[in-house]
Image (cartoon, rainbow, N blue to C red; front, side, top):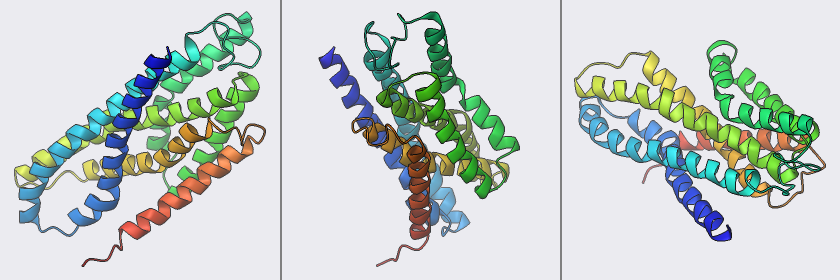
Length: 258
């Protein structure tokens, strides 16, 4: 199993580099650059550049998510007697109540993108609301995993990361990619894209960029339990990551040329 786990981790990291690297390229390089292009230039550049970049982008997202799920299965779900998921009982062999709560929390981790999607369409109308609700959500979810579900510190942090990663992969395949296909087709035909498509793709891509920074923290922090007895620190670190992300957006809009 050590060999299998190492191979899954290797594939997960490589796929993640492809995905997140292109995510940052789209948001901090291509976005500001594309805004400077003349319409005629856009008709030549975008239909050639974006399909190639989006191919690696969406499949990088898919394989990052799949290999992450496989890692969760290997590390946390498959071994009876492991205490990685819960402190005092295994997920599969523990008492019925503990087992039911643990399974429910895991299921919600991978279905919560529908709740996120609904909230974005209805409640998350301003950046301030998105920022505050996102921090509250992250902190509350960590509390539920650790204090109610009895998850270990490692399991808690990585399941928060898995939740963000699932939302991000959902955005790529079901919100960003369909909108971008319509945008590319319109520009290729010499038409103006429907205003809703750039707005949708841009918003969800920005959400993914913000979520990616705490996601990477959750991947790293599970190996050093410095937040294990300070649940509130998770919300603080999510906020710090988002502040850094905002600073990077501002820098991207003002990168000097040669």
